[in-house]
Image: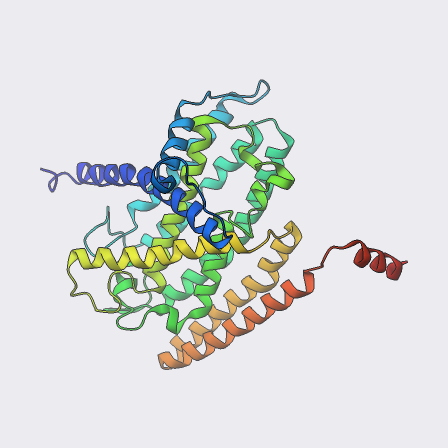
Length: 376
């Protein structure tokens, strides 16, 4: 019956995802606290449950039962609808996101395009949250979030387009179908032939997720929580849910695009359960990398954030597009693409390190006094 009714089939598949995502968010919240605690030489949660394992469950119960407060001067409909506008697009992206060769909602020919188009809609909800809260800090955080997402969406899209250009299919080169992108990697994943798009993708997704060092829209020391400062209880938890679901979505997408998905390294003849193990391992690598970055890097200033995007990431993204075009036009072997992209990655990494070293200014009274005397 389900096979004859595609709408019911898709609805049941999305229901499974909708039930699995909150559980995964609870687990990821606990793991993030433990991982960051270990990196910073702390214990993390330890009081609630064995080794603090029930702390995330207790937080969930608290958020679901906490009073839902709305500011007196807030725009009622804008304020209350904002969490739904943020959460719904995040879940819709899973319509076209495969987990294994047979575990997906729908295999869309333009799946990659669909995911990129829908994932960008959540910024509307964030702007609604900042505007509807009638709070200057919330509005400032929303404006920061809009500027940040618009800027970093460009290198993210260009990096994925560069990979899609080179994908080998049965009819030639180029595809936006995620299954064909996974199958086209064969025995060598895309991260080997195109390390620069991977570098751009990882940096841009950090900015899209508003995680350190790109957590400027929600910086506690500057805008005390940003667009979500006036939210509490279940509405605030919906923003938190969207953040972690987005984290899972980008981690799965990165595993499919750059790490060979469920195919690499043993090919597409693996069993269903082994494909799940491969995808779980690769996705976990991305998630732990995001946790690691959050625990070790300081927050950028807003001018540093924008300059890094427009002066370094976007030019290198266009450079990768040009290199891929030359490989396709002149039919160069894959190793030339890997050499060119690897060289460009080293150059991008050097410029990033050089810019960070130049902008890092140690603060001390003696240093600032000497600098002021020099300026005077």
